[in-house]
Amino acid sequence: MQTNEQSVEELVYQYGILPEYIEQHSGVWRIATNKGAFALKRINKEQAYPLFRNIHSLFQRGIKTVVPIYQTRQGYYFIESYSDAYYLMPWIEDNEERELDFKDSMMFKELAKLHNMTVQEKEYPEEEITAFYDRVSEEWTKEQQDLEKFVDVCEKKLYMSPFELQVCTYAHEISLAQKFSLQKLENWQEAVKETKKHRVAMTHGRVSFHHFVKDSEGRGYFISWERAKQAAPANDIISFYQRYLRTYPLFCDDCIDWFYEYQKGFSLQEYEKDLTLSYLSHPASFMQAVGQFQQPPNPNQRNAPSERELVKRIQGSYWLAKNIEYVAGRINQIEEQNKNKEAQTS
Image 1 (tube, rainbow, N blue to C red):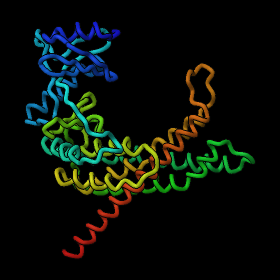
Image 2 (cartoon, one colour):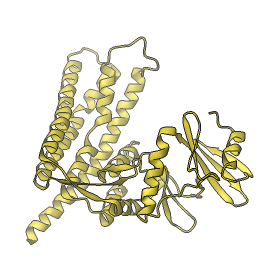
Image 3 (cartoon, rainbow, N blue to C red):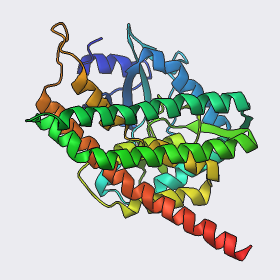
């Protein structure tokens, strides 16, 4: 369905709304009316029911940091087209700076509240723990071996390509990240085999400063709940840092402060911290770029990345790995210091 201003007017008419002004922001339309401003959002049709179920569940639990969804005059929460669905919610003016310029820790306080109010502890059979660990460690160990083989082949060449030269330059530091990631995964396995339990909570699925807004009274709200699901709480932390730190090289001390701000409201257990640091440090995007470079040319594949694009991708993946190295390294250092203090006082 092609959505233009006229079709937007037809959609919001089903809510009994008469627009005075309509402006588009990507997949969201701001609808100005004499009753205030509304946001009409377009999503994939398959996401509609899970979104409603998640938001309804959060409201039932008394969680207020969710922007409500309005019903049409017929009582529906969504208007469906052939492949899309549309829903209406209040428009919350948000004048805060985004992403790298955003220094407010409120989002992490609210994320901790969300996880704290929805957390559940579940049994974790030992065979599942072993199977998960074996599968992931085998996959990551193979990536280590693949990187070593790739570097060996490149270093035997008289002239390397720009991509090969970049990979060989970064390989040692990436291998250290792989070893750290595997060590933390092993620590997690040893700890969780004893407890045989793990925790799940309602996770947002795409935590970002772009998906957190504050109203004029300073209250914070999460938006864009399409990927919400029951999962390990740390998933939200991991995915946030992997997106936020995908930028130019920086030492993000704020990232460390945010982690411990979250810890005040929802304290991750030791084995959960190990798994968080393991997945956070795993250089997945770097190895994906190496894998793409090694794929044989396919004349039937459209829009295959050029070597120049892959060089840019490997550079960005390296910066991400180094940015994460600083954050994960400082958190790991703080945790080790805390353990030593506890051991000395006990």
